[in-house]
Image 1 (cartoon, rainbow, N blue to C red):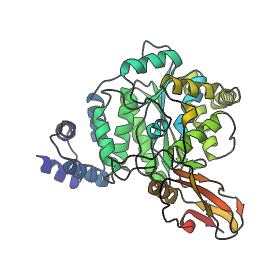
Image 2 (cartoon, helix red, strand yellow):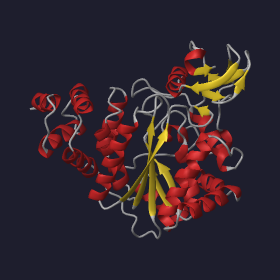
Image 3 (cartoon, helix red, strand yellow):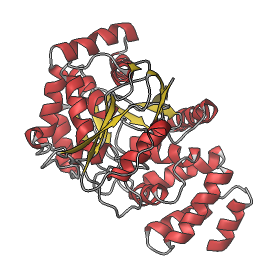
Length: 408
């Protein structure tokens, strides 16, 4: 039956709920091997899924574990998800902003998919930080400070945990129905009333075209409607890295700078303000212009930063002990001109080579390494100017500057 199901999807046919149940629960229970599930995931990646298949898979994910209930806690429970990209540390910035503006933010995040670490990897670069909260610990923190970012807690969507890790190392990350089922199952099971999805598009993202992004948006909203959740989506650019830092500790430090109001003008700041404003407008039922003012006030008053500090302390983290590698190397421009493009994908590959991401699911991430951009698109540079700084541990990978920075 296992091979029959794989072949059926390989031929582009629709799988029944029972067939999906048999295969995915079989994998969760250890009755189906990695290589067999990898074959089905690849067939899904190539041939897609119908809406009915996607609804069924989302239900299987949700039903594989617990569903959290925060109805006893006052306030609108809101969650945000990004489909991921190079330098994307938006959750670390947006979640405390929205909580400071009156939202109840309960965010279940994952580890790295592809070139750089995920939100949980970034948080784990903070020494002592606990990201595996029990349901009791999670609820206590939500009641106390209205903000938590944690890994998938306890028995929450355990099926997605195992599929998520396998997708990362089998070239099946970019499947639209698999992305939709993974994201929405976690958001629904974690008790969110309202959900904002940041869909990345570009060479540094899993989705390469706006057409695919629109398909994902439509599917996310359909799943939200199916489960009576308000879902909004923003399609954002990922052809250049977000912000200036790529690498786990470096990205946490950059997020702190933004929350303190020390960095006010780059693509990361602009996106965080946009997404935060939408979320605040959703929870307070106000227009985005009014919400934007509240967001800006939370930064200038340091309320958002203090909320971040509060969360880190509640989860036993120590911000004073974050470390980056003391071994650095400058990447210098080979010509004079204006930076026309910075290739996010190539930056991602470089960060992976440095050790900031995973090649296989068992790999350990080096939190201290990464890339810090010094120059950005539109900047004028002279030959010999420093374009970026590499933070490395042992050896420096070969760097082809011209594949990363396009200077004209």
